[in-house]
Image (cartoon, rainbow, N blue to C red; front, side, top):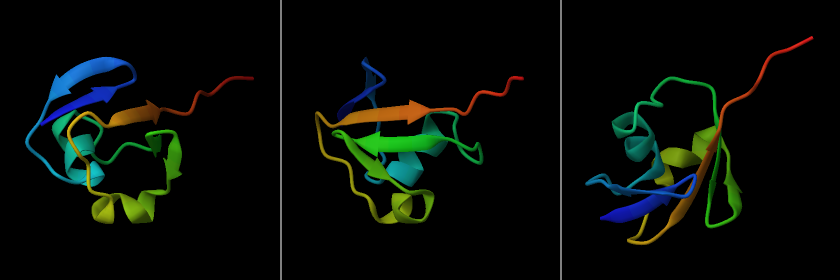
Length: 65
């Protein structure tokens, strides 16, 4: 399936957000996620199914002082 992650096109096989994050190298990292503009909390990622053409946003927290 084709999805867009932070505006970049990706071809992936996984059907859930959690599997997609793992496939894309974000597994285990603390990130915020949204699918088609809707925030998806970490506990809901395994149940969030992706569809062809979905827009996924992944944001990593920044540290600073």
